[in-house]
Length: 175
Image 1 (cartoon, rainbow, N blue to C red):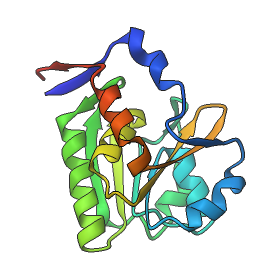
Image 2 (cartoon, rainbow, N blue to C red):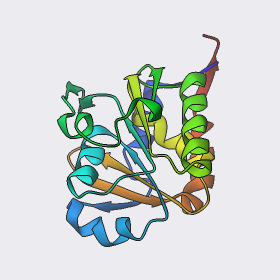
Image 3 (cartoon, helix red, strand yellow):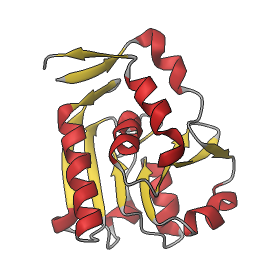
Image 4 (spheres, rainbow, N blue to C red):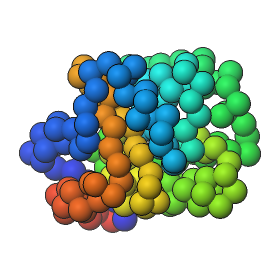
């Protein structure tokens, strides 16, 4: 099963789900106080690694604003080890069962074994924020980039209901 977002509903995802920080540095105190950190997006993950902050889970697609991005920081970092890298497929505008399952595995590995997890998406990772909100521990923090605006910081417990409402906008399609 694949959840597909209709073009007409994409504008509902333009508003940040959490607090928007135009400057990454302004969010650092809150980021550093996070107990369980999930990073969605290449730029967000690179910014964290530049600060020597290692998210429990990082989700990337090797693209920044739909342009190919070579993740040198991620490639040369301890977060990228074979035992903690998961691969999944997720086309643009969708949330696949495979993405849900991969995020679920990453959350279990990160919480049970305390091993940092890197998910590499073939396709697009933008909508991965929703499954992360639904499945992450209550105390989790999720960070993602709002294109051309800054960093979004959200507490899972504050937006779980909103994420469930947004999921209702998707159509279930057999794959």
